[in-house]
Image (cartoon, rainbow, N blue to C red):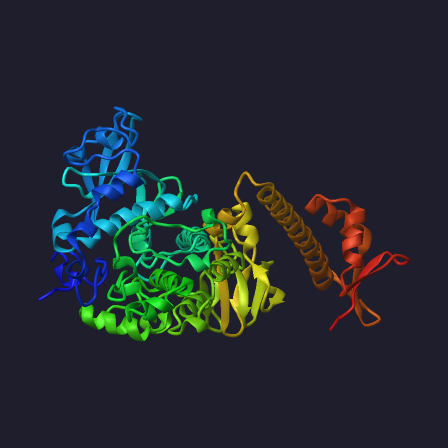
Amino acid sequence: MNRDPFDQAPDHLDAELVPTQILKGGSPAADLDPAELELAPLLDVTAGSVVIAGHDDKTMDGSAEPSAMARLRVADGDEIARGGMGSVHRVHDPGIRRWVALKRVDAQQARLVPEVAHLLLEEAQITGQLEHPNIVPVYDLGADPAGHPMFTMKLVEGETLTALIGGSDRRGHSAEQLRVILDALVKACDAVAFAHSRGVIHRDLKPDNIMIGSFGQVYVVDWGCALLRQSRAVTGDRESSVTVHSAGTARTSPLAVLGTVAYMAPEQARGELATIDERSDVYSLGGILYQVLTRRPPHRGKDPAASMLLAQAGDVTPPADLRPHFDIPAELAQIAMKALAPLPVDRYQTVIELRDAVRNFLAGGSWLPHRRFAPGDVIIAEGDAGDAAYIIVAGTCEASRSIQGTATVIRTMGPGEVFGETAILTEQPRSATVVARTAVVATVITREALEGELPGSSWIGAFARSLATRFREAELRADATYSLAGRVVDAARVHVLVGGVARDGHLEVPWPPLRQSIAAAFGVAEHQVDGIIDEAAELQVDEARGVIKLRAAT
C-alpha cells in the first residue's frame, strides 16, 4: 500500500507545523517509467558545473575546468536545517573563499519518493531565476555521488521570523518589536509580489521561511513547493516568466498537496490545483501575521488530520478571541483576518494590497500600544520622570500644575490631543499632572518608539527637540513670572489686611514705602511691582493719595 509521505516525518518534528506534504493519495513513481526519473541527463543540460558519480569532472563543452561544486566538501559541512525533503548544510567554498549554504535531498526520502529529487532540481531553477534583493540567490547546481541534485546559495547569518516572533514577552510584542517584525513582513511581501510578477506562487510561506540577516536583510527562502503560473506573468516576454527543465510531475500533479498545513489556504489544502493563485500566498502571509499577533499559526488541531480539516474549511479564530489578554492592535487583526478569508474573492486580491495595508498601519502609528484609564486615574504626575507621551483616542483629560502649593487646572484635553511629549524629548521631569476626567483610551508613545521615528542624527529629530526645549524654557519662565507676581500680590494683600485703616469701605495703607519694601524683598524694580499690582483684581493704588486699597474689605 502506498503511504502518504506526510506520515513519514521524523518523530522529533512537529508534524503539524514543520513537514511539507509531498503527495496526497499516492506516489507518482508508480505511474512513471523509471527512465523518466533519471536526473543525470537533466543535470547535464541545466548545470554548467556538476558532479555526478561515474562522470569526469568536466564542464559541458568537455574542458577540464574544475566545477565549483567539486571544490565543496559536503561531508565537512554543518547541517543547519532539515525539512521533509532534504537538508541544508554550511560548507566552505575554497575557490571564492566564502561560506555558502548547500541544499540536498534526503537520500532515504529520495528512495521512498523519487519525485523529491526533481522537486529540489526545480527549486534550484526557480529560485535562481527570481533575482530580487529579498530572495536568497542561488550560486550553483550539481549532484552528489549518488546522482541526487544539490545546489548552493547565499548563507544567511541571522534568524528566522519564527525566532523573532518568539523573542517578545508572553503578552505580545513591544511597540519596537512589532515595528521590526512588520518591517520584515513588508519586505517579504515585496519578494513574493515580485515572484508573482514572474508567474511563481510560493505555496509554503511561513515564519520559518523568512530569514532576517544580522544586519537587517530579509530573505524569503525555500521555494521547493512553488507553482508556476505562466499566465500570471506581467508581460509576454520570455524573460518575464520562470521556467523549469525537469521530468518531475509532483509540482503540478492533482494528487499533490504541497505546503505546510498550518498556514495553507483552503483551496490549497483541498488540492484544488486549478484555483491556487496569488491569493493563496496572500492567505499564507495572513497566517504569518496571525502568528505575529497570537504566537500560533491559524490552523492548529489536535493532530495533523485535524489541522488539515481546519485548513480545508478556512476555520480561523479571531486573534482577540484566541488571546484576550494580549495587546493586539484591532486594525492589524482586521488586516490579518481579511487576508485569511476562506474565499479568495474576499481576501486582498494581491500581495501588494496586503503589503500596503501593513505599511499604512505602520505609517499611521497604529502599531503603538493603547492603554485604558478609569475616571480619576492619574496618567502622569508633575515632577515624575517622563518615559512616555500619550495621544488621546477617546475620553477627556484634565491637566493641572501646582502653583503656590495649589493644584491649578491649566487645560482640558480630548481625542486627538497630545500630552507628555515635552518630558521625553527634553528628558526633564513632568511639568504637569494629567488626570482622566472620563474613561480614557490613549495611544502610548515610549521614548524608544519616538527615537525610532526621530533618530538623533535626523534634522527633523533635532528640530523637534529644539522646539520642545524652547517650549519648556518658555514654560518655566512663565511659571517663574507667575510665581513672582503671586508672591508680590500676596505680600501687598497681607500688609493691607494686617496694617490697613478702613476708609470709605476699603482697607488701605501708604503705598510708596510698601512698594519700596516689596521691591527690595523680591529683588525687582519698583516699576515692576507697580505693573504686577496694576494687574491684581483685588488691589488698587490711589496715586493721588499715595495709598493702596483692598477692594473687597470686610
